[in-house]
Image 1: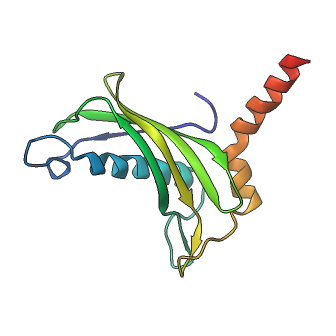
Image 2: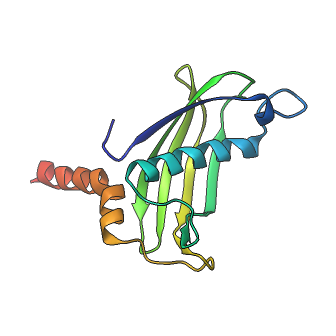
Length: 143
């Protein structure tokens, strides 16, 4: 696993399911957001406070199989790219090694008023650390 990847595991609760007994498609995005927040907290940064937040502003997701009550779900999330105020993450949602969903989300760091604010360089570097290392390794291999 790359240094910038984060694995997060949770069980599907009864509250996660709909009348058909499966996880509603929108709830899977909540699982992914939990994984993203766990990743940021593991780096030692606030996720939501009076001063800042990280709302999801763009989503692209493909669903492969339904999730059911009491299944253990593994979410793997990693930064795909970063901008001045945003991070784009790729993710996969798995049950017993089988992909249930995959996609990309973009989050923006905002201040307490919801206005985009620059991601501090130290945080950007921590989030994107292995992405940059991979690019450098690729350039060295080409030489």
